Amino acid sequence: MGLFDMSSEQKLIRTEVRKFTSAVLEPVASDLEKEGRVPSEIIKKLAQMGLFGLTISEEYGGSGLDALSLCVALQELSKSCASVAMVVAVNNCLVAYPLAKYGSDELKKDYLKLLPDGGTGGYVPCSDLEVAGKECSLDFEADSRHVSGKLDIVLNGASADFFVIPVKSGNCTTQYIVNRDTPGLNLFPVQTMGMRAAGVAGLEFQRSELKEDQCLIGQDDGLAAIQSVRDYACIAFSAIALGLAEAALEASVKYSKERKQFGRPICAFPMVQNMLAEMKIRMEKSRLLVYEAASTFDSGEDYAMKARVAFLTSGEGSVFAGLDAIQIHGGYGYTKDYPVERYFRDAKTLQALGGVSADIKSKIAEEILQ
Image 1 (tube, rainbow, N blue to C red):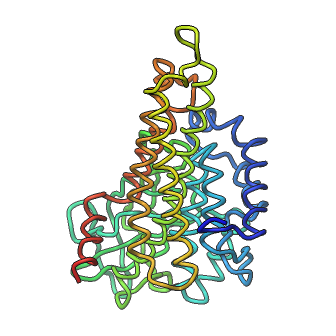
Image 2 (cartoon, rainbow, N blue to C red):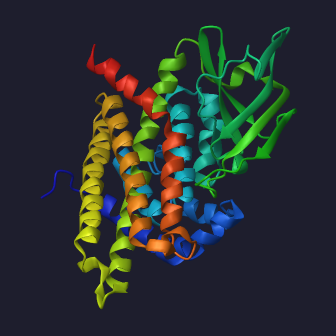
Image 3 (cartoon, helix red, strand yellow):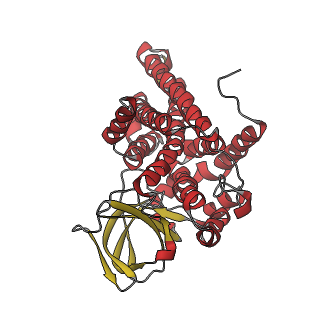
């Protein structure tokens, strides 16, 4: 018996997602990256499987499952295509979670119900957007607020039906929902190192209105609420990193058995064996931390510290696994003939999108020193 035993429902999720990735996602993963988007037919299938609303309550059309179930699904998805896993993670954690926890009944009705059927929400990860600064400005007209400026990174931006935008004014931080068809809102493409099919885009506002009835997180909750949402997302991002590490290891084991040098497979060489063993050690360590963080959240306990530790550990582990996988594949590891170079790029991009490592470590230190 392991430390974390899956329920029958979680085992079923893992089985069904594996079938989907093997039959549908794996064959087109490389093409998805070249196209730089997740096609509508893939989104439709993900929604039909219940993944777009996995953690949304049944009241709003979702599956009402827990964080550990989400991690199981994300881990399997990311083994084939981390970009698709990222789209699912953003929808469930950075969009659906704050809507369910902080949104008004009207916002839940208008937006939360859209997600299980394949609706997509975009999220701006920068929680320190200063609207009084040079990049983004805010002006008032009677009872209206208008925002102008440019946001370079929006997760799920390319396919989003609406956006969750954090806005900082003075010492206060709020979060608004802005519809895709809002006047003055324009999307522009963003080229990323990895996660190229995750729909990362940029937004530019030209006096776009922020409506008060679409304020998701007000000044009373502010930065603390936004941080709690990001900590929850760390659990999902950790599961994606875990899946990437597992994919890199599996690819390396397969290649090392097939590739021969000096009359024997390279897996017989101590150097290769050492790399494989180290990849496995880091992967299993990440698995325990990710599952523990998810289980802690599900039990209603304080999950922030464990989520941050899990994200840092699994993120570093996936980058390490990607680098060693490339080395084991030799010159082929640097070509697109094998997926290991994509695993590495996705892992490194995930680290950046999940938050600055130094900032996360600073938050961990602050909690330790309290």
